[in-house]
Amino acid sequence: MDETHGQDAAVLDIVIIGAGLGGLSAAVALRTAGHHVTVYEAAKESMTAGAGIQIPPPSTRSLKEWGLAETLEPFVTTPEQWTFRHYSDDRLLGSIPLNPFCSDRYGSPWWCIHRADYQRILYNTALSLGATIHLDHPVTSLDSVLPAITTSHTTHKADLIIASDGLRSPTRNHLFPTHPGPLATNICAYRALVPLAPNSPPARSTVEVHLGPSLFTLSYPIRPLSPLQNYVLGHPLSSSDPTTRFPRPISLPTVAKEYASFSSSIRSKIAHFKPEDASSFFLSPRGPKSSQAPPPGNDARGDILEWRLSSLPPLPSWSSPNGKVLLLGDAAHATLPFMSAGASMAVEDAACLASLLAADVLTWLGLEGAVRGYEAIRKGRAEEMGRLSLGDAGSWGLGGEEAGRRDEVIKEMGGEGWKGVGRRVKEEGMGEWNFGDLGVMDWAWGYDVLEDVKGWLEREGRRR
Image (cartoon, rainbow, N blue to C red; front, side, top):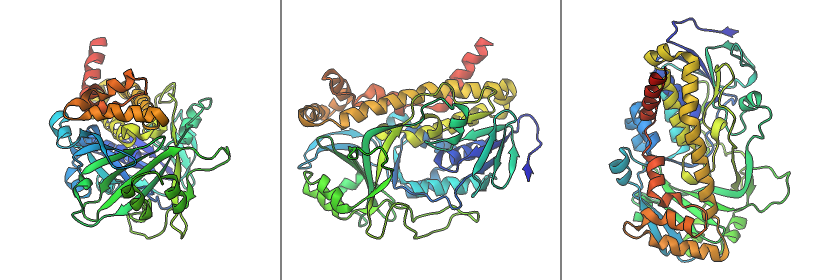
């Protein structure tokens, strides 16, 4: 079957490859802008494996602008602060405000949510707005000139193809075959969940980090109606075997042994770890449904998945030469998680693109101009966010005496002191500490993508 749509020049037929957070965000934004949107997802039932995810102010702003606040708010937590503690005894090193600080300073809150809830809400919203979502439709070929895709079931010629097909994007490989692709780091992480009793202690209101020598734990609450504490345990790569495949299951006793030097509170939490949850929600051709199937890579023993962190070196471009195929989200700019910005940047991408494809702007710019604007607005910011994340990875992973020096500097976070800790960490030659640098935070979290689009359009108007 060949799928095409006829429409006026201001209404585009848009294909999105991938039904992850980025692809679904784009579907919501572009349907809101009035375009025909069809999403093709390879998986038969797109399982939302994962656990918690943080949503910083730039993306909560966009989600609210799309009318999703009322739907999302019952599923989000709003932590009051980031706290940093010594790994061995829970001693407080310092803290950084989050809520209501983010709303007061940046105009939008900081949320935490279960990835499954987030994806389910975006999925339902895209459908309710009139997007078409095809599961079990892996893309088998791409023609970037027409442009068109062929899947196992259909061929679809479109006006624009958006590839939000992830870290290992086949579309990116097609457009840029000489690019090296994602680069694996020597940093790994376990992800797990711990069920909480309702009205648990005040620690639930924080994003909490325990910093150790070359190891760290990060945790925060998700799912206020059925509380869970989300855990990420960072550690150096242990396998020197280049054929090791990630993610891989690791036994709970092995995890406990690796973190045996951490405080009793952390060790007791590890004893209650549950594998990251993929049972909450599946996508199916008939819509979301619940399932109790375990996530891939976990067996009946309840092994914890170990992930190897990767990032994507900058690309020469985010689009095909004719501007009819473009990349979005991790396909364009996968980054390390240390700025909590990966999924947030995909939402920013979607909001930017939809704004440039609004009927009046599209009529003025044309599709090629809109795609050029998307790349001009988004590429530099995404690359800088990736650089900042890499810098923070260095300071979080310090070992030995350097870790002790880092902790002494972090102690300066008391009162208003946190605003200058990032500068001190850099001065001491310990990498970067961008969550303790108010200037960086203002750049990262005070960002308004629609204002950025507006500024670019004004400059473009003067240039013309």
